[in-house]
Image (cartoon, rainbow, N blue to C red; front, side):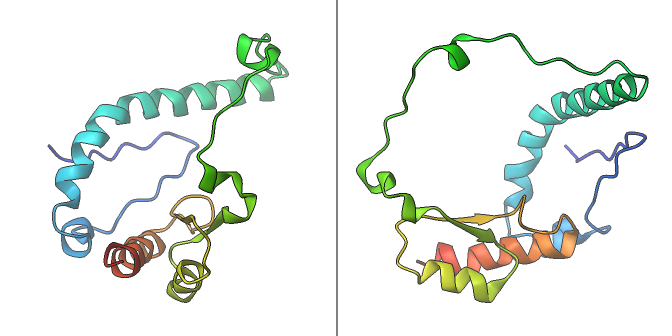
Length: 142
């Protein structure tokens, strides 16, 4: 199974350079990723198309409304956290593509670190590749 590249008008999607996936990703990564891609790509495409349709409607003056209240927003609810997670000081996150910052976060003494490949890392092949490389080099060996 191969990863398909379909563009959706109005939305830019980044892709790895030709052959880079096989050359630069860790051995076995594509065997892990391709089934996930196959499972979720169609749903992702549908969500992007729905987002595009909502934007077009909004630009025509038909602004979206909020969802009606649900039990999750009306009722009192609570998530039980493990003791180590109750200390709010452990919420350390940062970009995975900066090797020096990755090492500093891992050596910070925080009980939990999230190396981010999404919001705080540039959405371009080289930065994503560096992030994966840093995570594997500095975290897997620990």
